[in-house]
Length: 257
Image 1 (cartoon, rainbow, N blue to C red):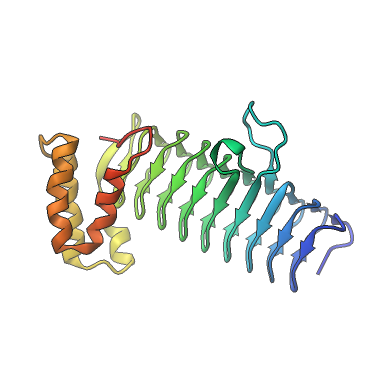
Image 2: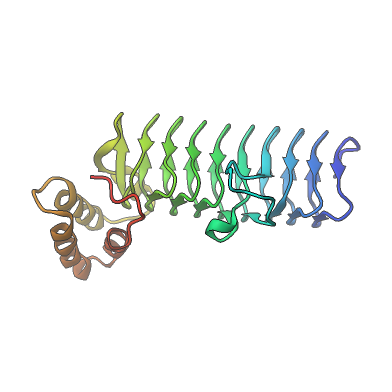
């Protein structure tokens, strides 16, 4: 299961069924769960905890030091869940003491080549990151979000569940759940209705999201008045609650409008 050219620190912990390809390097504090496959020329360093059944392709560099000038060697971490696909040349950094000390990737994520997750990012489950998508530090990405190729997210932003970030978009403010953003400068372009259909949302629920979108983006309402209008929809369509909660708890960057 371990290629003879791989270099694995004796203190690293590899569970049953882990495979490690040629010339890969695994450092002292690394923990890798059952049946995870590490490709050739992969570097896993720092305090990195990887769950079960992940597949990590060649030349990925996971657990490297943050690209943060304030970092002084603190013992921070990278945590990766289960059943993720991480393609070639991805770079995920450990966290910093300024924000909990942990960078996280959840479960069942599809991460394509050259994706960068900076320090302290928190990525949920079932997300898709296309080639060269990048997150700056402290970004939160919720479940089922999709980032198209060459898109980028500014530090401290939030990307809501089921949202869609278009190709080469540069996100500088929070993207609410279900919303599609695209263009340069990036702006809202409707609801990710196709993604909602694929995930089992009913026609009525999709229509409710579209109504909320219109309140937020196609009316003359202020943000505060839009929140009140959307709150009225929540009583009828409980799945809208995540949309409202997102608006009530924006990041320091504010909501994209």
